[in-house]
Image (cartoon, rainbow, N blue to C red):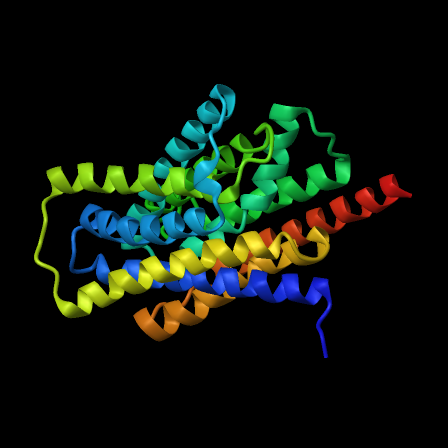
Length: 293
């Protein structure tokens, strides 16, 4: 029996969040013994090979962006480099679930930034939800308290860079293949990894460490492919909320692999952030339907 487009999109989104979180788990595990930038460089080579093959198979490599699109791709790639550095530096020192909880603020901040940069209209309900979500982030981070982890600020900086990365593709003109955009970011991150490794140093890679890096690279490719496919199936308003399943994966994998479990305040803050994000997505879907009617 064939499944509906909405269900297909939901399953793909769940698979994407699982793949990205497994990639993060591999990276956190391997950076305990290998230098961070060496790991980024090695994983980047795997990601570049996979995305390059995808671009070749889909003939996306024939596409030549104009100057405007090229500048936007460069901006997106630089933002992706900064987001990767901030995220992995934080991941190296923070529990996986705690960092994932901070990342759940991303949809809220994208909605707010789109209003500030592109003039998107947001009513008082969505604005209130965004403010409530930011309060949830403060509960997770807890600045000025004993539970404050300064590395969580790097996680928040990573979120800001991802907002810039995602909004930078909005003005892209024409039918620019997603593989070209992703490959540009992969090249930039990999180059950054090699430059960083030149200063940080390079260690011999054991078979176990090589397997972890390979796993991170492969799951990163799977995460990208399934995330793109997810947004091409079904109603975005139905599919997008399942991004939050990444937090569930982070809690489970953080506990099983590293023995980390967030405290009650982190759970409370994460619940507030996710609840506010779900309300915002529901409200946007309702407004789209009203506009279509």
